[in-house]
Length: 400
Image 1: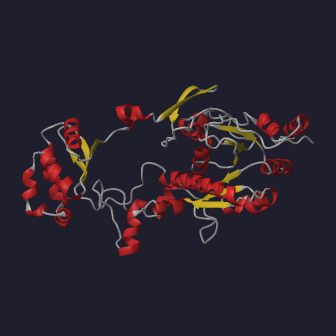
Image 2: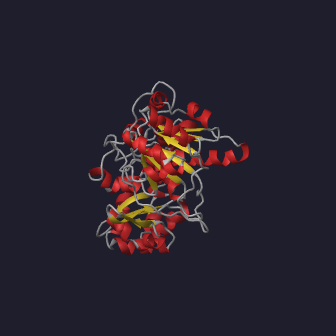
Image 3: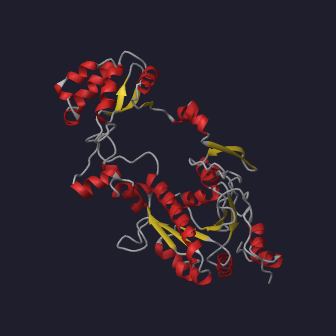
């Protein structure tokens, strides 16, 4: 049997994670989000899929799948077949990272749990993302973003007062769990440089969502205050929220006395400074509805663009409330370069979201199109030391 050293990354060596090999067992969103963070910074990510994965067309060709799975190679491998499991374990021996988001009991049934794989490769960093954690009374429940938003408290503080629970318009629990998992993987890899040993990394949608409550969680933990829905009004910095202009709505953020004074001056509403209802932060909080009406009245004489320019010029944070198309048309957004381009042999040129973090010498890059199922199976297996006759046998037996 032919053996080689660890397969080289296909990413350009200038990328920070070039040379790292990641085996990606994830599906849906949280797991692929974590792995995309590694792929965009140069790790050689092998996306492992069942041989009967959906063909190109339908959801795989859609924007969501394409955005999540750029910079990855695809290997189809049936882990339920003994030959497939054996092949995967051979790959683990040369990998740096395995990422999975099965329900906690599934990976052990498949024979790809951490303890099993650590015995093969003690340097392995093994990341698990679940709905509710790897242990505990909810361990085996299926996870879903909206369920975590509800159980994690987010839906109780989102929306207008009295409206009833409202989900956030993005899968924030999924996305944050993925980002935290990626951070944990990088921390474990950094620690491995000192110890020479890998370790398990765990997070869940529920943990990620609760962590993102941030100051609302702190209000409960430290002062036993249960936050409620505040709509577009900031719960503590007042007046901060959405206000009506002559032609629409804008956001204004007013924190502290100096910015409050600047806002009134910029609006030509200095009389508000002398109104006893608004004399300090506590009074403005108590009378926030009346204050919002007074600010709307002051804004009614000019359009949104005029007010945004005027307020920012006076040091008062203000901005448009953009639909998605307007976001990408904004000159500052275009200047920041928030998109990246890659060519797909299946779909042609694709524009995708770029990473929001810049490194001066080794920036991230989108270098690979989202793969078709099994598009790179032969080259991946070859790089991991499988001889041509072994690959042919795996294909003949339907394992690949």
